[in-house]
Image (cartoon, rainbow, N blue to C red):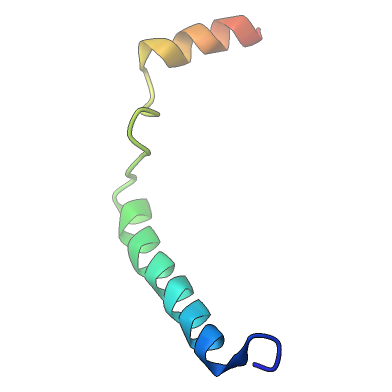
Length: 51
């Protein structure tokens, strides 16, 4: 707490808690980032370029 102070430490704990609160259900339901779903035409074209 010395490095950040009481207010910043509380904010950091709140942000980490909020991240965990959202990441658990998203991972549980296997949600993906919009535009990055498997099987999109752009993804297959990019894979061909890498090979």
